[in-house]
Amino acid sequence: MIAREDFSIDALVRKMKKPEIGAIVTFLGVVRGEGGIKGLEVEVYREMAEEELEKLEREALEKFDIEAVEIVHREGSLKVGENIVVILVGAKHRKDAFRACEYLINELKGRVPIWKKELK
Image (tube, rainbow, N blue to C red):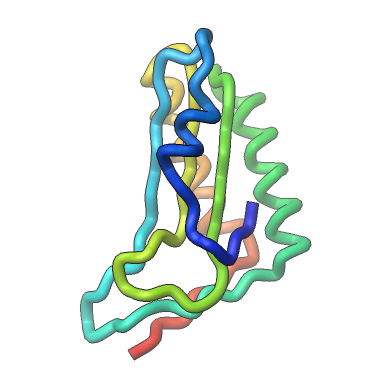
């Protein structure tokens, strides 16, 4: 999902918890302020990005032994310390959840049409 507003990691985790899920692995990307950066302008080709994120979620569910996936990426002007992206992966066992989460962030970076411009 692409979102303008910030997301609640707690709410996303609560939504993912189910009896069959024994591990939830979370990746959270935030705006860092090194090198004089004051924020980011995140531009998204929304229609194509949403489609690619859904495709990535389906791929991860097929490729790894996991039960659930949730990806939320922000767009717009973000300040240092604000959330950019969150990926949650729920699985019976942690190893599968970690592997899937790493796969998802790596694929997202290479495939989803999202551009970030540093604001100084």
